[in-house]
View: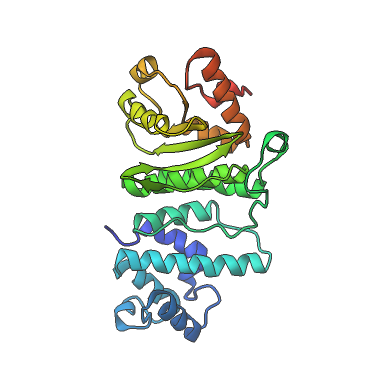
Length: 301
């Protein structure tokens, strides 16, 4: 696994001002203390003086010679420091898609998705009936999620990192709409990518971020997980690349509906209500015995 690439160093410089010789508003002593506490590294070690003696030069050296996971940890800590300072002083974000682009680098290096520190949606954890229909998700939250979704395209081809990023994004999206989403869990050797609430039903979630389209055998496996549970359990299978033609022709859905990456993009970019999308997909599946129809057809412009 590589260290930070030259093109990625440009983004780091945009975010933290590395090429100026400074790093954010750190003094020499606070910079040294920050790296010691957050990364357990002596940033002023000779190993990090190969480009020069300034804070920015030491940071550049660290990003190019250290172990990937240590770099990911440092970038995450710097991001937290920067964001809390920026938001605390009321500054607007000046770097385009900063969160998503830096998250892609951190996850490529073995770290986790960066947190979003903007004010989050304060809606009740789960909304029902008329409340769910009238509720609108927070615009700032949706904009950040759209940015995070687009960042998936810049990630490396490591399937595990992409998959985890995709699962977390979907959970955050459902929570933005008050659907009480939960992350992945394992039960009796069975892996479930997450769950959420809609109406009186609990929906199990399967999220696939892969280049190949999903086939019927994979859907039957997921449907089996849903069928083994009580009658108020349903399922949503989200395949970023979509489904094979044969799959859509031969698979008979019972209690699951389907979505693809274009559905997620349309929901985010058009700020469509997730509860309304789920309801529309359910009705279409019931009326036409087809578990998949694109959001853009269910909600034409």
